Image 1 (spheres, rainbow, N blue to C red):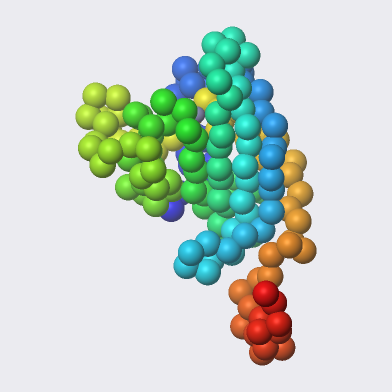
Image 2: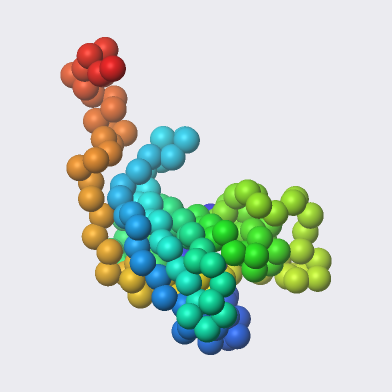
Length: 159
Ligand SMILES: [Zn+2]
């Protein structure tokens, strides 16, 4: 899995320019635990391009690590735009920084022949907002808390 700053630095100049037309709104930001029990910060954002006026896209980022500068942490990213599906989903998945959700497993031989892992304009546009986010810890028990015998016995009482 690559760091968010690595993905930012890999992003081509044209995407950087296009990202200036995108505005986003954070829907959720919280600490979560993934399928393997790994703690991470989860961010969901709704973003739209004010120039193309395409329907809004939904982006999800999972940030692994506790570096204060959020971009220094490892990141799993997803966007439901067409560009992400055809240029990035496979390339990012090969590095553990996304999963194949929309794309077929075929390599993007024409769109991204070097399989460079980078960000679409929607995710890139959200980075300044993501840097300022605060993450609520109270909703999700930590792994340590889940292993705590007191809490474990409590689960029998939770419907
Ligand atoms: Zn996108």
